[in-house]
Length: 295
Image (tube, rainbow, N blue to C red; front, side, top):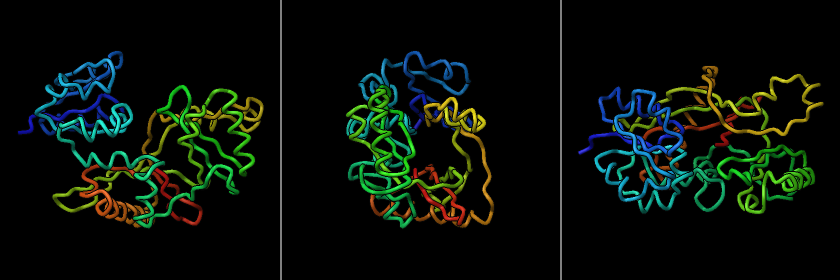
């Protein structure tokens, strides 16, 4: 019998914990030592489990304390614990489909763009490094913080190679970063996140909210006049540090629901039973009012 709701204390854990308390569930959070204060300060955690590293979540003593709970995964859970451990060494019931988590990646057989292609949802075209294309957006893990990514826009294949050499020289990326490099079509438009919930009981797709990312230092660069940007020439980073609410014109909501429904159906076919619960599609609205999903 389920007696509690548990989470890894990071990412969107406070939202989950607050909702669980509202529904009268006991709550459990697993926090890394040194990052526990928010979960002590907000009155939404009944039991706080401290670990040296998040990967310790699969240790026997932690699993024992999570035994009567349903675990709600978030992106930090995937990144810090790892897909293989989640699938093979984490016997706690998960809210959702644990085998879908690895499909958030861009490389390998299980990748997000394969799902979008199966759903017939437009996405940025992808290229190999050096392949004639432009403009492109290049993404690859940082050398010192592999969970974060370097991004840069290149006008051509030659420009991409030159900018990549500069990043390597400055040690922003390294040879290991190149193993997970992604080169994509640069799509110019307005960015949105559509936050969906698919309820299996009602067989219904719900749109809960629309928001946008706040990224550092990109958000600060936006606020600089063009002359100052040229003079300072900052190294632009795209580190996600928050979200802000947004609205989208109602005439586009038909397309928003359409991509959500297509994505649910594709996931059901490829990774059965598919999506169970919340998911987000991040997309760009082009001047032609097309939706291009990129994350």
